[in-house]
Length: 144
Image (tube, rainbow, N blue to C red; front, side):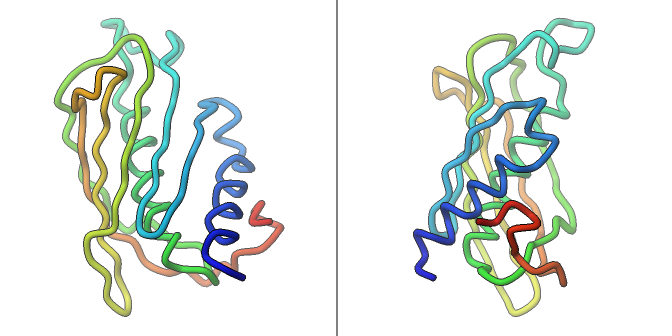
C-alpha cells in the first residue's frame, strides 16, 4: 500500500469512530501532519456560553494522534500523555486543529498541535506523547 492510500484509510477510520457522530469533524491526513475541523455548536458550550475545553482537547489530540499514525502503517497508536493550554474562548465559527510530529524514536512519538478559530487566531495549543499499540489497523476499525 502506498502512503496516500494509508492516509485515506486513516481518514476513513476517523469518520468511522462512534464519537465522531456527535462532533461531526472532518480530517485531512498527510505525512507527519493532520488537520481536524469542527464546526462550533451551542451544545458544545459550558455555562458561560463558550466552547468547553473538552472539545478543544478532542480536536488537538485527534490532530496530533493522526499526524503520528500517518507514520505508522501497521498498528493503531495510543495517546500516552497530552498537555493542553487554552488561550482564547470561542463561541462561533469553526475550530481547526493542526497537528505535526516533532520527534520520533523506536518506542515513542511526540506531536504538537495548535487550534485556531475561523480568523486563524490561536485559541489553544498542546503537545502529546504517543506509542504503538498491539491493535492492528484493519477494516474492523474502519481502516479501509
